Length: 115
Image (cartoon, rainbow, N blue to C red; front, side, top):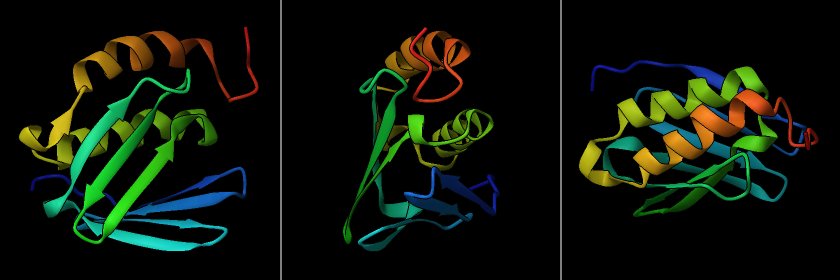
């Protein structure tokens, strides 16, 4: 993979997400889960209104609710995941990108913005 990223996203102190070139780790209140990116399937979801992504792998699944992330981190994480995971392993990206990235994210800065 040509993508490289070593970032940590913190979300309202409820969970954090650490992404490297090889894996994604989600650390929550009840534990953590790490999935290697070379063996995951990705389902982009338009629910809730700020969008979410579910990654399925051999060792489990990880869900990330983009509304829980800072506005600047949402698009960075979504675009990076879209580039890092092969296209055949992704489902619903085009709809997610049109309905959420281009429409909802410019309107909402946080999950509490209802305008």
